[in-house]
Image (cartoon, rainbow, N blue to C red; front, side, top):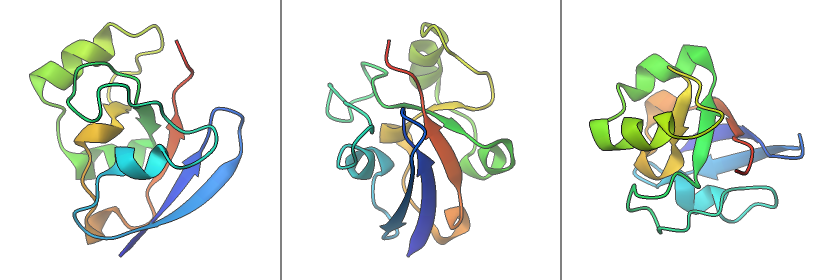
Length: 105
């Protein structure tokens, strides 16, 4: 079980409890001010764009090329911090991670 701290688009903080293997996008769809995730997690729309706090980026590893391509096309791309929530699976190592939902485009 991992605890994740999420700042939504309105600046409100949410504390999420997530099981190992759970998809971050699915949880973020459930909160007010969360993500739309129009493609349902298929890595094809970038509507689940989040900013990961710098110290957690290394624990997530590199974004795949298809994810990076989508992110680079967004207006608020932040190299090294931008990720798609649909591509993040929870692990014990991510316990305490902090992220912010990217502005809607």
